[in-house]
Length: 141
Image (tube, rainbow, N blue to C red; front, side, top):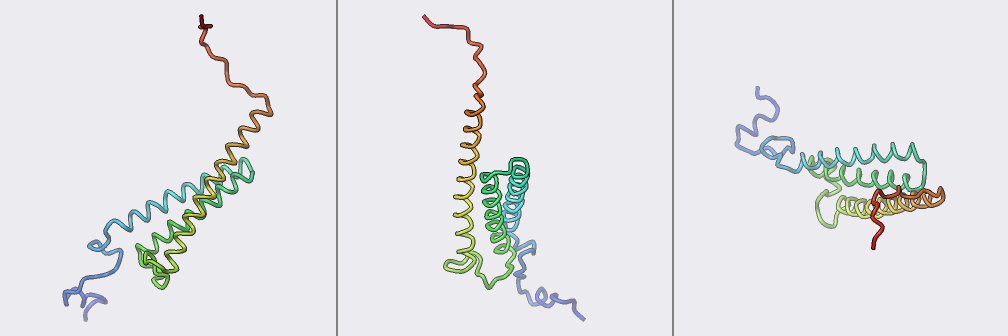
């Protein structure tokens, strides 16, 4: 009796499984690296949101979630999960999920960072915080 799948090797057919060493290529490690980095972004934005609780940090969390969706779509494409979405194919559902999540995530993160910057600037201005005086003793001519 042959083990399941061993008849393919006997017939000389190449395996098409994405985790097969010969076909793995660079797409799976790249997708997993992207998922790891976006997960770190999500965790750091959640920590920031828990400490500051503002609309800006909430926008950063939302943007990180959208980037997680982008990373997951790339992982699904590399591992051939849910092929009915047509991951990586033009004019497919997977393509538009990836595209809209990336575009919306970028816009939301930029708005979150700008709002965070302006909130910090406004709070410094209200508290009367001034920059530390310079140690430069030269007064000019």
